[in-house]
Each structure stands twice: as structure tokens, then as C-alpha cells.
Length: 134
Image (cartoon, rainbow, N blue to C red; front, side, top):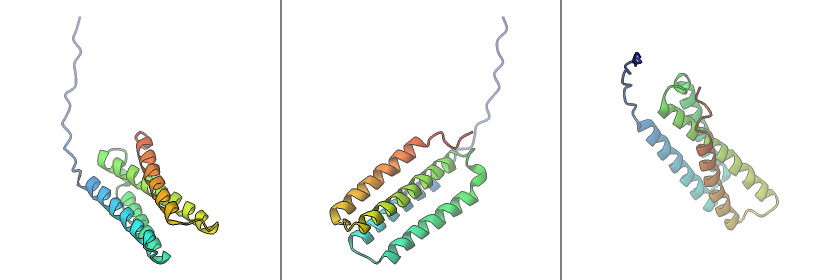
């Protein structure tokens, strides 16, 4: 019998994980700032400006790296992180708005809302592992 010939693999250059670390830190700081603004009764304009900065930076990152989403592991992970964070922000906003409309937007509900936001973030982040890959 003949032995199978294996093709030699060319080693891929190691990707830097710096962008991934920067996005983790950025979204963590953003989440903490939103929490501080909400719990200290800062005007809504400040909270919405943090939302706007998150959305603009996220869209800019995706637009710049759209060609590398399916090939780069770091870009793929960051896009998953962006998707999870933006869905969490939208969900938290509409739940907060609904609570405010029925006059139940209390400190206890705010804490529940932020805990639910973290759960939503991790649920979406962990469930989108193979969503974008070809």
C-alpha cells in the first residue's frame, strides 16, 4: 500500500490579541460608565451620548475590518463582542423605557436590569461562536 502524502502546512503568523483586549476594556468601561450615570441620576443626554459613542466605534471597526471577519479569529471575536454588546444595550434601553413608563424604574429594578444585561451579553456572545464563519 502507498502512504498518503500530507501537504506541509505553512505556519500562519500569530495574530495580535491587542484589539481584542482593547475592545474588552472599552466595553467594560462603557458599561461601568452607563451604570454610574444611571445610578447617579445623570441626565439622559449623557447616557445616550455613551450609547452613541459605542455604536459609532463599533460600526467603524466593523466597516474597517469587514474583509477580515471570516479569516481573522481576533476580528471574528470582536465582531461577536460588538454584536453582543449592542444587543444588550438595545435590550436594556427598551426595558428601562418600559419600566419608566409604568413608573417602576426604581433602584432595585435598575440593579436587576444591569444584571440581566450582563446575562444577555454573555448568552449572545457564547451562542454566536460559529455564526459568522464560513
